[in-house]
Length: 108
Image (cartoon, rainbow, N blue to C red; front, side, top):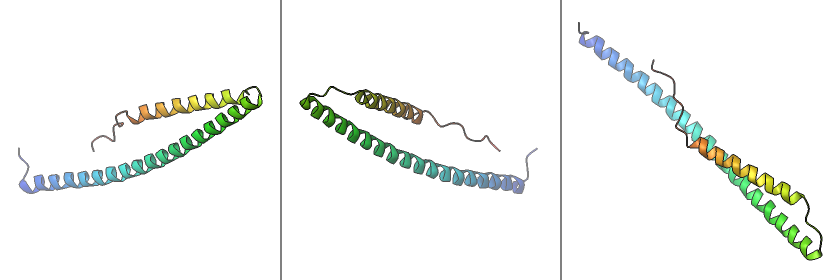
């Protein structure tokens, strides 16, 4: 048995109201996620810049020590290990960022 036209129309309007609400929620969530990703990108960029500066400073110290005949220190290895670890973390983050989005809430 078919629904009366007014009932079908009311159901369609209600469905569209839910859709509009869901779209507004998704829009807000995507805006928040973009803002978080921008902040993360800024922090990563700052971190990378700092690491590059530290690497240049360590290289300068090694060069000066070599010229002065001072043997290399262990701290160079620690800095290299930190750089490798950081690179691995960034690679893992990039891989996670490329995963498909997790499913949202189910239908109402």
